[in-house]
Amino acid sequence: MGLLLGFFLAVFGATGSVLVLYDEIDNILNADLRIVQAPAQGEAAFHSLAEIQSAAVGIMAIILLFSVLTGLIRWLQKRRDKLHRHM
Image 1 (cartoon, rainbow, N blue to C red):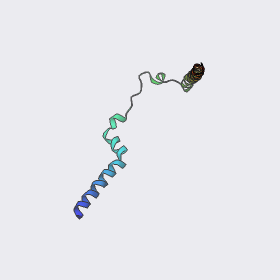
Image 2: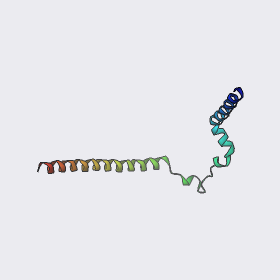
Image 3: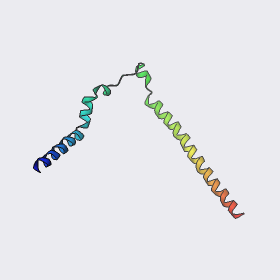
Image 4: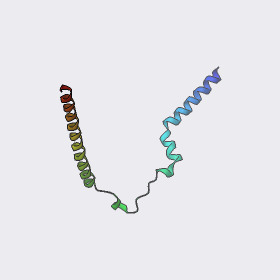
């Protein structure tokens, strides 16, 4: 009984240690996957923060316009349905 319990505690301890040290074990076993190659164009391949921000602002304006138009269409459809029910 004691040996069986000891075996299970050893298995639980080993698997728990693997779970706790997963990142370190993964880094050791897959070190080649952690290296990123720089793009051939160098820094020219990246956009400045100002370019990214201006693109995001433009997209947000389009999304806002779309949601306003969607809300307006839904409101008009409800209004139309209400008018048809009263006729």
